[in-house]
Image (cartoon, rainbow, N blue to C red; front, side, top):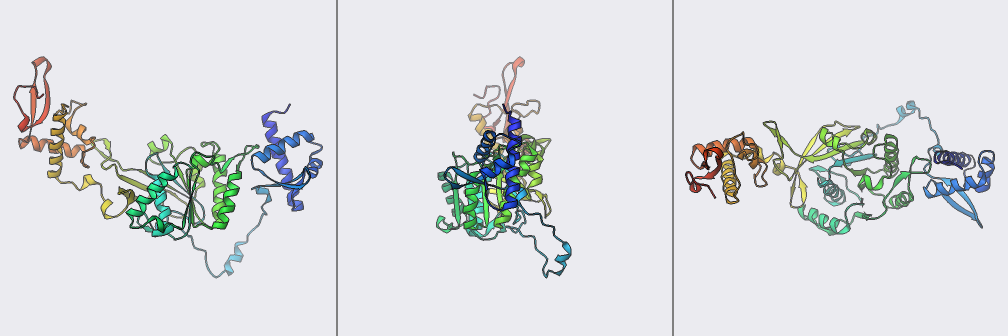
Length: 448
């Protein structure tokens, strides 16, 4: 009987042996060669089981060399790579110093490496990634900066094609373009399908899957300027909190980026602790450390009077949380307008920063009237926690960007001017009150 951990160790030993023989002979290793090399360690039937497991995990490439005869080549095995020692002294004679290259003018996305975009569900990360695809494939712009032009491969394992079609139509329309202009964009749709690109092998190590190798061959022919993967959880079969597996998974995509000389842009979801802390990462810190750059898309919140609220639900903040070759910490303020995110003068400041007192007064009066018609009480007293008017209004969907502080000031102005009155009714033991407009006030009577 052979136990699971012993079987994994044997599989790793078989893979090591094949790799060693392959590096010596530089040709596929036959079963007979392998059996002879391992004859003093494992029985042939156990070696056969190990070979089957390694084939299932895509750790081996199998060649048919005759009737019922096979030979093996190890895939993506580091020991096969020649170890080269570079001498920096030789670089002195090179004419030009290499430049750090970026896909975009803001220097958020390095040319060679993996960039992660973290954002919670329904935050707009897929929309932002599709805008990046459209920018590279046609418009030449993304979040207000120039991007390199070229072909794009967008791999979606979440959204169905119909939804991608709708979003691309809205994006192109928002930027005065058309779907016919996106001839450089290719969409690979794996929604609802097996989409794993990296997964643990029989030996427990993260390895590229058969689907990855097929994709890589297509990408080599296509020569894209950008690869977008939506999302990490759909293509990664390991543990999200295992730092070793996370590092090895990003190594695979990093190697693909270097081989194709194009960025790999991967969407991911943050953990609860990552969102609560404001850093926006998820799982293990290895995801952050292994990526060349990491971006975070979040809502814009403002804190007033020790209360946190969202002045405009259409606004997002794109932060540069990690940059290996650039300054981190920069933020870009985006606003969703007509099916796409825009940056610029129309999204430069929070709405609550620009509203006037008269506008806040109008909104306050409107909401008082609306609550009165719906028979909902609004109190002028801070001690009434559940229906304190400024607090209730600051959370209302029709607050038009006004804050609790602004509503509190507006309430006082409206009361001083006689526009709003406190209606009191009921016996002394059970007094009730609510704010009403002057024309709705009836002294001593219940408002409804």
